[in-house]
Image: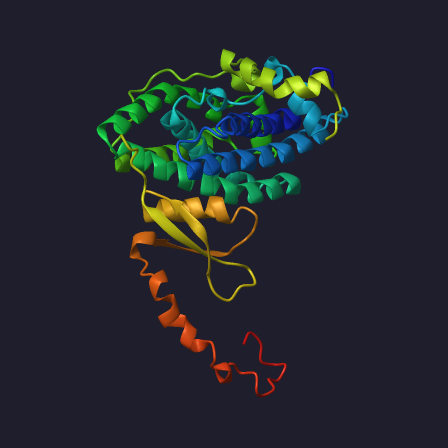
Length: 253
Length: 95
C-alpha cells in the first residue's frame, strides 16, 4: 500500500466539491437576485447542488474510511484539500457572469450524471440518477437565460459575451484526466472526463449559435482545481463558509 | 423614472391528488417559458404540484365588483339548486 492513492475517495471529492462550492456561490445570491422569481430560482439550484454535495461527500467519507462525515469534509478541510473545478469558485460577478458559469457547468453535469447513472457502483449510480433530473432542469434554466441575454439587448449581449470570454478557459478542470479518472474509468464506477467534452461542446455550440454569441478563440485552458490549486476567490468563500463550524465545532441548532 | 416590469402571469397548479388546476398566485416573467420555470421554483418547490398553467394576467376577463349584487345575490334563495334532497351513493365521489 503506502503510496497507493485512494482513487475512489479522490474522485468522489471532486464530484462533491464541485457541487458544494457552486451551491455555496449560488447561495450568495439570496436576497440579491435581479427579480424575486430569479432570486428563488438561483437559490433553488444552489440548494440542489448542496443536496448533491451532501450525498457525494458522505460517500467520499465512507470511501476514505477515516471517520469523516459530510460536515467534517465540507467544513474542516483547507483550500489545498478542495478538489472542485476552478470554474465553480469563480466570483458571482453580475447576473450574466453567474449564468455563464452555471451554463458551462450544467452542460458538463448533464452528460456526467448520465454516464454515472450506469456506474458499476450502485451507490454512485443512485446518486447520479437523482442528480440527473436536477441537472437537466438546471441546464434548461441556464440555457434559456443564455438565449435571452445573448439575443436580448446590445448591452446584455456584450456583457454575456464578455462573461463567456472570461470564464471559458476555466472549463479545463471539468475534463481533466489523470490516474484517478483512469482508474475510475477502467474499473467502471466513474466517468471518463475526456468523453464528456464532445456532448459539452455540442451543447455549447448549439446554444451559442442560437444566442448569437461567439465562441471565444481557443486559449490555453486553466487547470489545477483537481489537484488542490485554486484561485484566491475560494479562500474568501471557505472563510465565510467554515468560520461558524470551526468556531463552534459540533454545534447543533 | 419608473422601472419597467415584466408582464404579470397568473399561476394555476394541479396538485398530486387534485382533479383540477387551482389558482395559487401570480408572478412576473418576460415570456411563457420563464413563467413556467418561475412558477416551478416559486410554487412547486415543496411538492405542491404535478402540472402548471401560466396565463397572462392581461388575458383574464374578470367580473366587475360593482355588479356583485346583480350577479350573485339572486342565487341566495335558490336552495333547491343544491343536490341536498336526495342521497348520493358512496361510490359517487367528488361531487
